[in-house]
Amino acid sequence: MKMITAIFRPEKLQPVKDALKEAGINALTITEVRGRGQQSGIVFSNRVGSLVVDEIEKTRIDIVVEDCEEDATIEAIRNAASTGHMGDGRIFVMPVERSIRIRD
Image (cartoon, rainbow, N blue to C red):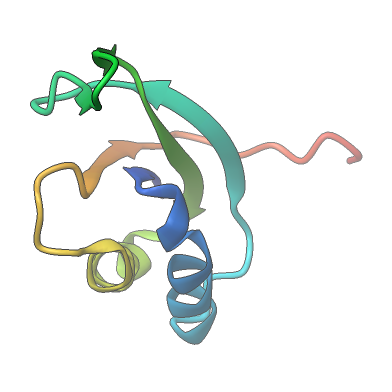
């Protein structure tokens, strides 16, 4: 099994959820996060002055999939979350040794 964690623009959440559902992936955890990467923040300027926002709001999803579902899951996320611009996000893939249901 694999844990796939994706961090991307919040406005891409619904397209990502739709793409995952179409790929047969229904179970996921969604978290609102803030951080920075290569962008190092955003500068807003107006007549009064400038405001630097060094942490950008993003959406994080965590999904555990079987090894055979890894590539399709990654492609679904990439295709749905991409705008072609810096700040689209990252996908991380980690091995999962076990998954234990709490109620059992």
